[in-house]
Each structure stands twice: as structure tokens, then as C-alpha cells.
Length: 397
Ligand SMILES: *Cc1c(COP(=O)(O)O)cnc(C)c1O
Image (spheres, rainbow, N blue to C red):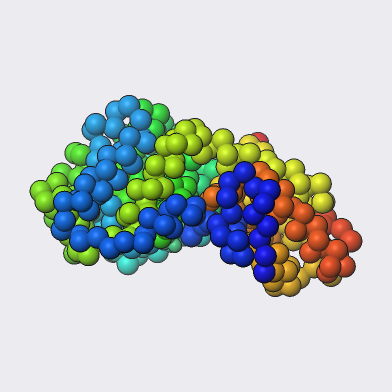
């Protein structure tokens, strides 16, 4: 396995380590990894200062109006933070409307089943986006709905859902919005002046380019106050974590100290790159380089330009019978790139991530590696089967 680091603008992870073209954990910088080479006492002032800095800097990313909000980190993977948000902000007698167009929306509904909270769904299948119109209709027919839950970038297809349109509809109907912005926050703008959410969640190992170990909730202070006594989980009680942090500067239970140290460095690099705008520019350039190169080889994307996120791209699997995903995956890995299987139920696909410490020169190497794999496998054309192209026509601009 070899990764040639010589021509990348950004240094490769470590020579010999494959790039993770996956939506988190992802490829982190050497500096982020290096920040983990010391131990921290969780009660110590130095670590408390890091926690305060992390909360302050994340809050700054939601833009003007952020004073009415606060940031609460939660131990665990992103799903823990989603569950903490749902269990803390959705009152026990409340009802959610869950907008589903992929695995992460489905997971939200599943979490509500576990929590025993009432909910309705709008399920658009594998990837079609939920629209403001249909959300409006659902809210009109069911006055019992108190909250709408939406996934910002549905990572299972890579679609960027129309969160602004949905937020406007939810506000116009006097309901509250909860956002799973796990794979988008830090690279796709989510400013409270534009999108009036009640609470949102993301995690350390996505667009901020930290390592896995915690998620975070950004919520209105009024919502944090109202969440007192709502959660039926001790460890996932966002109000309790917030109140304790406000009072002591500490996490309630053992924090992932090394992960937090790495995240502080990741935030520094995020700032240095130009914040959300800078990161969006690099990820967009990554995606454009990838998509153009792959289309040049004959591949087709599931989504049209309007819906493609700068986070992860779904490509249809070639129709050529010489193509097999397991074989392709192993060959890509041997060339230094870890890709991701697809999640569509009707057509075969695979995904390539655009996030992490990578830039367009790296993405050009990804495309070159794909071309080599096709040649090695004896695949003469990357064109997908007609059923894939028919599927795609379901998505109108
Ligand atoms: C990554 C991700 C999550 C959380 O996944 P974990 O594996 O628990 O970190 C949730 N929602 C979306 C949209 C994601 O991309």
C-alpha cells in the first residue's frame, strides 16, 4: 500500500497510510494527530479552558444571533448526540415530524421508537428531498406536531436537503426545528440568522476534521432551560450536561481528553483556512475535481448538480459485468484510497467522500487510481445500467 505524498498541496496523512474517502472518521492532519501526544487531567484548569474554547468557537460558527444559543458537547459518536438532542428537546408529550430520505433520517425515527416519543414521518425513500410544500401540508393536518426533525446533508446518498426552505415552513407554522447537521456543519453554512433552528447536532470527526469521540449540540438557551427534567437518560441529558458545564467548567463524566485536544487544533486549522467559507471552497473544489474526472471515465452521479453536496458523492456502479465492488474496493485500498459502499436499495452504487484533509491534487489521484482499477479489472466502460439512469429521472431540479 502506498500513498505518494509528494504532489499534494496539503501533506498526506502519513506516507503509507491510506486516505479515507469516507464521511468520518476521515483523514486528519498530522498536527491534529500530534495534539493527542499528551495526557490531560479532566478537572484541571488547562483542560477546562480547552472545553470553554471549544464551546465558544463552535458557537461562533452559527453567526450573528449566536448569543441566544449555547454549545454543549456530549461524549460518544454522533448518534449519541442525536439521541441526546431528541430526548432532551422533544417533550414527553410532544410529537415530531421526521423528514426521511436515507439511513440517517431512518435512524432518527428508530431513536424516537426507543425513546417512546410520538412521531409522524414524511419518507421520500432512498434520496428524494423532502420539500417545504409537503412539510406545510403535514403540519396543517396535524396540529399535534410540535417539532420537525431534518437531516442537513443526508450522508447515505450525499444529498444536500433544502433546510432553508424547510426552516421557513416550520417557522411559518409556529413549530420548532431540530437539525442533524452531522456531516455538513463547519463546511455548509448553518447560521441562526438564516435558519432558525431550536437545536442542531454535529460531531468532532466530520467537517471540522477532528478525531472521533464526541458530538455537540447547539441549542437556544431557552430550549436548554426548558429541557430540564425532560430526558429519561442520565448520560444523554443535554440540560444536565449544560448546567454542570456552566457551573463547573467540566464535563459530567470522563471527557475524551485527547479527542478534545485534537479538536482544538482542528478548530485552529479550520480558522486558518478561512472558517466555514474556506472549508466549503476546498470541499467544493474536491467534489468538482472528483465528479469531472469520474464523468470523464464514463461514471454517472446519482444526483444532478442542484442536489450534489460538497460532502460525499454517490456514483452508480458500471453495468459492465467485469466490475465487482469488493474487487474494486480492494484495488483502490491497495492504491492508498479507502472508498465507501453505496446505500441505495434499487440500484448498485458506491460513494466517495470529499471531506477530510485532502485537496484537488489528491482527488485527481483518486480519479487516476479509479482508471487504473478499471483497466486492471478489464472493465471497458463505466457507464451504468439503464435502470440507474431511469431512477435518476425521478429527481427533478
Ligand atoms: C455520521 C452521521 C451521523 C452519526 O453517525 P455516528 O456513526 O454515530 O458518528 C448522524 N447523522 C449523519 C447525517 C451523519 O453523517
